[in-house]
Image 1 (spheres, rainbow, N blue to C red):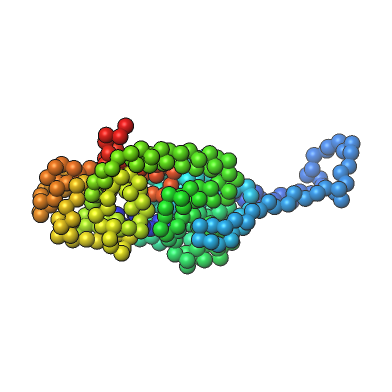
Image 2 (cartoon, one colour; image 1 turned 90 degrees about the vertical axis):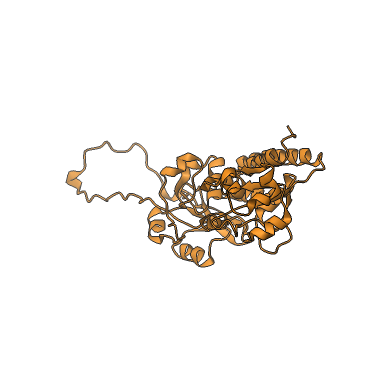
Length: 329
């Protein structure tokens, strides 16, 4: 069940205490002798530099005003952490959620969420971030609590993400941190690579049936993906047929009997990072009758690149295509 929570929920955090410079009360006798100025500045002619701000519409349709430049960022989701890093903003990240782990440099950053998804608001206040990037499924009361601290919150990510929404999220972050050109270049590249893979898959008529395993803490009732999930789109583009495309839930828990009845050609283990292997699946009671197990068509996949709606999703598609259509080079 922990894996399901990782797939569908990311929360918030922050850290870092800004330093203060003490003022000095100096008398005239303490001041060093200095030459008289040769020129005087007419203060009336000095134009104060205005605070630059931008108004943007985030993934939740909210209008958010963000002061520029943004130099201190808190990310509440692994996908958004990866987006910021991909836009050359790694040096601006000051705190992250506890599940962000890519790129590896972020492991040294303070974590402002806990395993139970609770948030340390005191840390957020102490961090003094210019912006907090919340997840699409961040609770509204959490967003409201951060905004009460006077910190702008930009929601990045739709609850039901698609490849198109991922591209939009990257452009949104690019605008927020003044990396529009980098975001455009990245999304154009992703779109080109995604389409090239889709075109390649379209040349084959074979569509193997697939059971995509998310969490088999209970092997008799594992979790999988339904029709309205982000992974379902990736699986379809990769040239597979989701055996549970007819259910109503995005991430349903199904029975062994249902899996056996649908007789999948292939099993993809998105829980392999949790120690699940093709060998362990073959040892499960009742699974020996499934065609994918009989024909040794059970494959692990890196869940981080297929379930995080971020810049590496094209790599996730490549991995799925390699499993389902190894003949396509």
